[in-house]
Image (cartoon, rainbow, N blue to C red; front, side):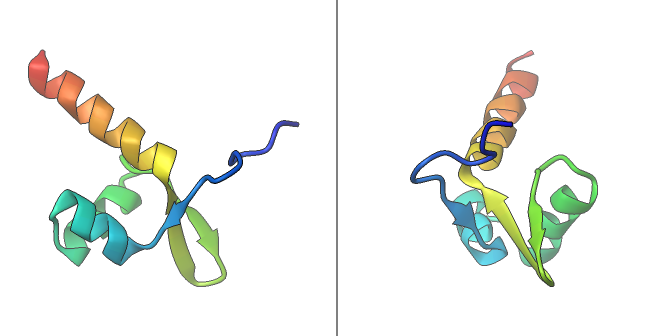
Length: 66
């Protein structure tokens, strides 16, 4: 099975995603809860792979352009 994250793959915290998307905490957790934005659980913490954030942004751009 290939690794889920490649070399140098960053795992972002919720505050980092908040800053990048310029959204509030509850908005980011809503995206996670509705699985619009993929994440992994590490204990009680949530981490968002950078590729998941990039995929989310790309998908939103495509939806907005349609």
